[in-house]
Image (cartoon, rainbow, N blue to C red):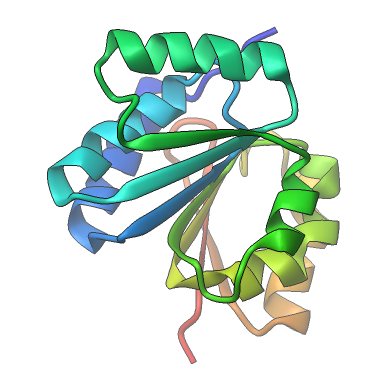
Length: 166
């Protein structure tokens, strides 16, 4: 099953990437590449590179097909991997922008590696208003343990915005 972001979330991601101008972008949860296309279009305008990770080889194959159809395959490196393992292997402060739309139950276990791999920038987490209970421990970990600022915007299915304000 493919659960894509809403069009308003796509426009929001495009705006954020266009304005923040990150050089390296990470997407955790590629699925069929719908959100990847929104991010990659904006990344192309600012000459950024995108790494997108999904554990499903079939979904990555479908995303590659869609990116090629949109002529965005040169902007995105697709990775078939467990997102947690991918994060653990990342160098410190690799990404300035992260979009998280994967297995919400695993996010709390990724929090420390996610924060370590991110040079803030922003982390944007989809489904913050449609699945708030699933994100509660993750949100607490980010704010209470890691000291990051967390807010939720009512865009699409809700976007949790994580930033380092200290």
